[in-house]
Image (cartoon, one colour):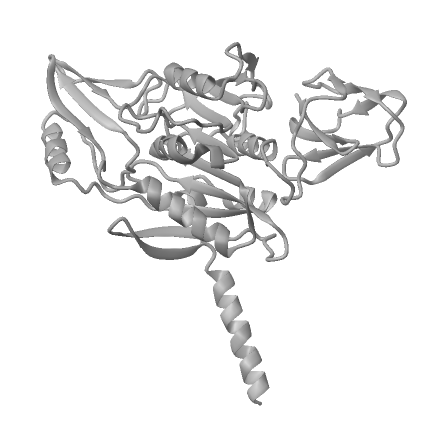
Length: 413
């Protein structure tokens, strides 16, 4: 009877722990009580090495964003990534809080419920007079907080620390860039969606080598592509500077990573678009052992709009994030080979109906086509010299072509 009771209790405890996914954790860091969410992917096992992705929410948002607004769980499950989603603190400086309240009288509202200490300095001017010039949460060591939870998590779970990515949206993108100024070389990749670099960002002289994937819309009304927002106040105009212009940010990382300053430019049309949102992709290829910089320049999207193929967009944010992570895993452990672009030639690509894979040989395994979720869609016998692939029955989208142990991106339009 005692054995049955013990087994039942153990089952209940295990069920309860699994139900708490993500699990909320509270620690003390830098003199503050800090919170974060820990998510274990469905494929997680203590006997199988995982990767890690740190997800940083936007200004006045919450750590739950990445499980609600920007669902990261399916990406984590697919790539076997443990997720950390920390929570930013409210503004801690009473002077900044009082100064921001003065802007309310001019119709410029800056709520301060959650702000990262990321070097984001807000400067508001009216008729040449400065109304506000303050750095948000400048006394909060968020770099130390994030670094601590990364260290503790990689020490506790089966995670390869070489496969640690940081992913920020909006102000979380600012924080991703600030964290990377201190610990970027220890990251496998940095992803920023509608974020930028603050004008007060620190440690920019540090030696860094980290792959960068940056998404930003030139029509972003919250984090301006050019760095400054303009407000029409009737008889007067006010301007609010919050970040570096995006072209300056990209140049900074191109120079920091020693990448090729002449990018490959692509018009992205992975899916038939039903709106007027367009995307240009700029890829700055790495030189020697350095890291690439990728910038997706979006036109027509608002700040909070998250591109999704099911909404009629020409590109899907999550698919691009998955592709970036897959192609920058530093060592085995997650079950995916890096996406590379050598050895064979695929033409045409994008594909309308049929394409040819050149430089192939007859192999036992042939050529396999997967969708972006990792589901096998088709197998083709490879021929000597070239292989014809028929994709006429495939839906529009991005696929992965696997041949001879290597993976290539292929687009069906």
